[in-house]
Length: 227
Image (spheres, rainbow, N blue to C red):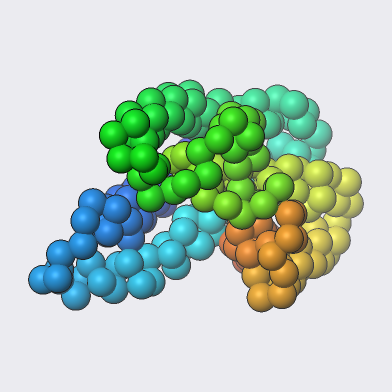
């Protein structure tokens, strides 16, 4: 299997797609009204669907590691080029969705005197959403298209992956050691803080990304040793 093939694994893409569908239509089902006769499946999805977000972070870390780890370690891609490639994959959709939510929230507010579900829909939060800083960086408030909060966390994980984990990692042990440190920091953020930068949202992303990168790096090292 060559490097290009490793960047796209149908099974991983399918699992990520399934997670996204369950999160959108099961975890957030109460956004469309609560039915007293709703099935246990939807109740369980609402109560535990957030775990699929963590799985999504892990699967994304797996894909990023396969596609970019060797390139970064071998200095074959610059930071700017790397970030542009990653953000370009989702930013157009994010921008269109943000503008649509802005319009519909305005119409909803005009009719009902309040916003739909998420209330922090002011100019400041719109600016944060526009720059992919809507969650984790300056706070953890839900605003506009709130389920897109993970996009801001992805960007932070991309930066950490390049600048802290991979950049200038001169040995596999050094790389694995930094993965462990980032994972521990992420877990500490999850359980122990709720401040800008230091909060559970960023912690979940860092832990998911670094756990998968650790296991992938360790597995590749063990395979080479056996060979």
